[in-house]
Structures are given as C-alpha cells and as structure tokens.
Length: 316
Image (tube, rainbow, N blue to C red; front, side, top):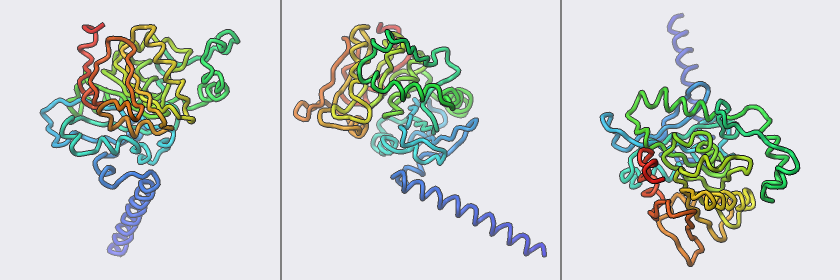
C-alpha cells in the first residue's frame, strides 16, 4: 500500500513538473526567447514580483559588478516570467558582450506601467485647460489614455523592484551601487524615464528607447543623469515627438542627454540601439547632444559602463 502511495506521489510530482516545464516552453516560444537565454536568466520572485537575473559570465563571488535594470515594454507584461526577456535581454546574453562588460542583468516583470507609487514624485495630471494647452500636440492627443492609466489600479511595482535590489540582491552579491543602470523600450522606455525622474540619485545612467518624458513632470530632476535615448523617426506607436520634447527641454537646462533619432525606423529602435557602435550619416542615424556635458563615446555599451554615480557631482 505504501509503495502504491509513493508511486502516486512521485507520478503526480513528475506530471506537475512536466506540465510546468511545458508551459514555460510554450511561453518561451510565444515570446521568442531562446532556450539559451532562458537558461542564463535565472527565475526568482520577491514580494510578489517575478523576475529573471543573469549573473556575470565566469561569476566570481569576491568581485564587485555593476547591474543593469532592464524594463520590458507592454509586450512583456504578465506573470509568466518569460515575456520580460524579450528584446535586448537576448542581446545582453551575447557571450562576447558579457566578457567585455561583465555585469548583473535584472529583468523584472510587471502587469502595469513602471512606477513607484511610494515616491513623493508620483504623477498627478493637471487637467486645467491652460495646463493642457502648454503640452506638445503629441501628448495632448492622448490625454484620455494617460488619464486612464494614471488613475487605474495597480499603480506599478518599481518600488518593489528597487527593494529587491537593496534588500536581497545587494546582500547576496557584491553589486557596485555607483554603477546601477536602467534601460527599457516603449513602456519600458517611459518606465526608464520614470525611474530616473523618481530616483535620479540612484542610477548612474539610462538608455530609454521609444519612450518619453511627460510634460507635466519637472525635467530639471533628470538633467544631471547621463541619458542616451533613441527613437525611430517613423514610429507611430509611440510618437517621436515624445523624445524630441524631452531632448529640447534638456537643451534648455544644459542637460546631460544625447539623442539618436533613427531615420526610417518605426517602433523597433531598441533593435538598433542595442548594437549601436557609431553614427551612420548615410542611414540617417545621427546623435545630437543637449549640451557639452554628455560623454561622446560612440559605442552604446562602452558609453553605459563608463558612467559612474560617484563622478556625477564633479561634472556639473
């Protein structure tokens, strides 16, 4: 009798494991995430937030490493802990890049916009006619969408992700807190701007693609954060004016931002940004500078990993 019960328990466990693995494979295929990438990014969960973490190649527990916080776009939303690995998380798993720039890559998953509802700098829409009239046309045309998103629950889990870094990962590993970077595309691009707006002294640098900085926010809060932003000139999903607006603001504020607008590119700016090594005038890929402050390094990852929070005050 005991033997039969044991067999049933083992069979049930194997069936459950098999079903779980089958679902992961199904989700991976749907999200176009390779098996290799899925293996490199170890799954985890912290206070209800699922995430994937890729350790540095040839990981050495005695060494200190930088960390990239990678925020997915709307296509990564959910709870499967797979769709959050799309886009440049695949490229960050490239062996040559990992050997050149060993780091942790944290890819959390959200069901809502990236936002820290515990921050004192939570968005509050000013819907007075005179306030709205001052917004760029691209933002005014989508006012209903923003109002719905900013008033709908849930409010986002960026605060939990930051706690994950502070209360778990920084205690498990030697993470260089002066070299924590934030990157993201589309919803993740907007989330990257949100992260540095709400916590400008936390991030050493940021790379938002096809994102935007809402006109109701105080742009002076991000002027000292090294930001390299990309946007496709033919993007109809997220209007290019969303990035043009914040870049113009940074020019007014002597900001530490550079902007690469990609001629003829639609919503896929991230695919080009993650491999960007130099401008290409023939293709129409030209980087502009908001001031004389931004680092002129032309390779995207060389630029990112040169940025260090401890150096920021000396460059203002």
